[in-house]
Image (cartoon, rainbow, N blue to C red; front, top):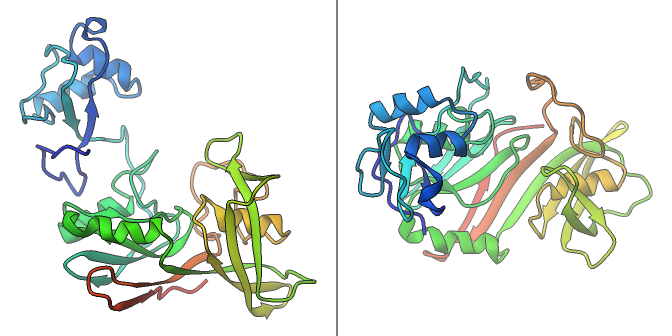
Length: 300
């Protein structure tokens, strides 16, 4: 269970936490442990954080460089990026807010949660800064490259009820995608395959065997040698829509992962976003019983 954080939000960033579970005899003090655990963070950076009181245990007691490593403790600290973080020049839009949910129209290129080189430019941190909702957390996934509707919970008491909708697949998610024209098919049709992790940790691939992914595919309109498709995923495998469209021979336009990974450059090409949009989400509210429907205002 996630412990209660004794540190407040800092510029929209919630503190990270780490349980200490190793043999304390391995470490002469907390500074040596943290430097070994996070080798990319210089010792001086940890000293500065500790001097500001930004590294504490679960009781809120400050951790000093010479503090002993105590197995069973939980330490809290603020994740930081060494060096500057470039601004992503696209803005999210809040579609709906109530006592339980925050529904957002996410732009392309913005990651949902902090990861890698993104911290303040993640959607979660942006929204915490904008709304002040400290308990905000996404209740489903959306790729960094994908734009559209995503739902956040900000009430821990009701979070489980909404999360269960996605776990039990009782919501209706509709995507739109631009890709090449798929010839020789009658629309709509269903595509199923078995998806597994690929050799590169961030990719998926198909393999023979019992299908574990299913997408319903329909044609919205033909646009010359391209087409706009409506995609309804029945399952929620990572990169499912992107893998399925590539496997059909019509990869989604500007996909840098499928069917072949394009070597990453220093920056994103903001002029060529992935042409995939989470158009809408519909569900029966588990608390009120009302039918809820949220739709993106964006266009591909």
